[in-house]
Length: 403
Image (cartoon, rainbow, N blue to C red):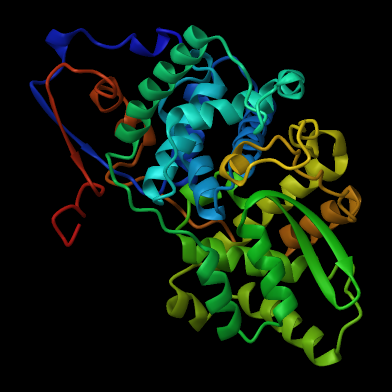
């Protein structure tokens, strides 16, 4: 971790006390402004590659430990949020991802000690050392001073992550919304499963099999910035809408009734109507979510080699101890190739653009200019001990109204 992020106003310029408000979601204007500010000399493409690399690392380490979906998804969200406030060049992505994973385990009561997370990360980062390990669980024999330095950096970044969320440990996931809303819309079980897989915290690959649409468990929506831009009910609806669009590319053989129900879901969600008030979402937002998800699919289709996760060698012991099962270095199965061609997905995007609604104007909370909301002492006070900082669990104008 570099010291570049500490180039802030001197203590004499900072107020004696300061209130920091938690912003659960950001508008597209805010995300664009903050991303451009923190990416430095990186291009947007390079930033996206760095983001996917970090999410893949969280996926590999979390899967090896055995964390549930919600822990991995929240860790990826925390990573995205962290780099809206802190420059990428000032932090090693291993430190940030592992700290985000550690904070997520606290939020979902799946706690592991930092050393346990670090040991598993070493097995992912250094598979050749894991293969030589004589430990039953495949634990990498790292130099103690190195491991301790890594642990201290993890804890230092943890503090910054906690401050970026204002110590608000509330985390709402879209998983349950997909099932409940899908049933309410009378979607088929296949479509609901497809949409649910779109929301899970791994990279997406698709298989269309007879009577089944299966999306393998790889990060998708949580590899993007969608979950920090929209509430979980909107993300769920966006995934249902995207799934219904994808079924039109290569519809599986299924009963006509099911096909009609799934087609009806897309028809309902692409038009404005009473459903927006019922589910507290906007058709324009669903279209934007669909574009983001399909863009990620296009990237995966165009560059399959970048769609893999770190792989580790087989366990040196055929019967690893159940007590150390979370340290087992058996590699995560590699995802199969996406069956859709990039040109199919591009044509789908073109068709969507021809019939989409005008973008809904979005203003940041409490300000017409996103830079006014996040410039100055708001960021300067993060991670610093000067003055007194009061962390509030909601944005300005909301705190005190049940928050």
